[in-house]
Image 1 (cartoon, helix red, strand yellow):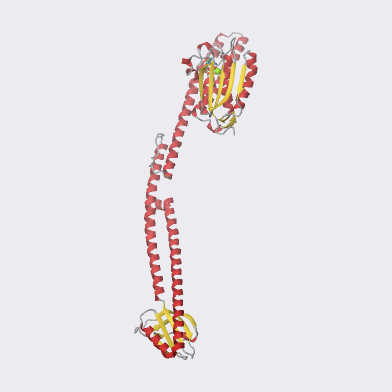
Image 2: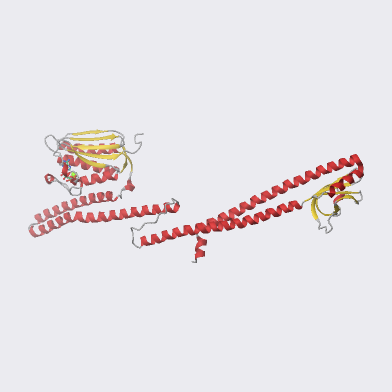
Length: 462
Ligand SMILES: Nc1ncnc2c1ncn2[C@@H]1O[C@H](COP(=O)(O)OP(=O)(O)OP(=O)(O)O)[C@@H](O)[C@H]1O
Ligand SMILES: [Mg+2]
């Protein structure tokens, strides 16, 4: 496409052109209105002047007869100006005045006409154009008073010229403005196209230039940059997810493989083989559980779960989970005390929060068991936050380990005897982060106090 063709196709050019047309139409309408109005005012003025002169002259005639009228008309005819006079007999013969000739028939009828005429005092008399009024004087004479309308024609010419000039000016300014804008906008769009081409070619760190003008192109560039940042984060997240899952599943898979291998080598009887297969199935089930937990954590960490967020009643979720664990607590002879404030609404994912609270309760039951075991679950509002606390009276976690146990697959030495993968707390803290909150492990002296804080949804109680 040629540069000119490209220019014609741009939005900026089309817009400038549309504005040009609109301005031209507007200027035309405005000037036409002015012209029409000016002409109307002039005509009105002509007519009233003529009317006044006719009354004056007819009064002169009434008072002083034809002689006086002729005198006055002659005098007035000699003063230069646009006024025209004619006094004729009934037959149409000129008696006085500066109108030399009128087209035949004009003076036959009284009334007002626009007509051509010739002056007596102009030798090369080019016919003029005038508004005349014919008046019948008593006694059969005719009095014609008129005004040349050349002035009107001059006005029209002036307005037409003004229109022509403004049209030229509008066109020139419009074209120049359009060209300037088009060039500027085109240049920036071209820059953007070039940058996106580079980014598409693989340079994912490339970003569009922001001029700092705050115009729509800047906003577009900002949004595209934000989008690229987000895509970058997601890509990184996905990469981390796959890396982590591959890494984390390597150990249990190797264990599974080794167990099968060992069974093949050592098992003699079908019963022994069956037992080995059962063990493998159990191990595979664990693997699936780990896999699911890992997947959830990884997704949360990559920020992929944001689309499934909604407002829900956190009080209800905590109460439901606590109720589920009541039977298990009873079985373990552990008193479970539950105290939940009503109407705590949170924006987030109901199932994930349920899973997080279940993980905390599961830990409290698993590791908090003992002679004085007791578990306390509370959910309450603290200014703009929901605070969910699960506290037990077990051995607790030493302060130095409290950060580490939040990592995946970390289990403390003395818990190795109880089942688990070391993923529970990782998931809780990932869920907390998804909701914009956090998980804190504190000393319950004795025992562990797990504090899960989530932002309260604004005006949740209203
Ligand atoms: N309430 C608690 N009291 C004492 N130690 C705890 C408590 N909760 C967690 N821990 C310690 O933190 C470790 C990590 O806990 P986490 O819930 O992440 O994994 P897990 O319970 O071992 O396994 P999973 O939850 O995946 O079944 C536990 O192995 C345990 O050593
Ligand atoms: Mg656990």
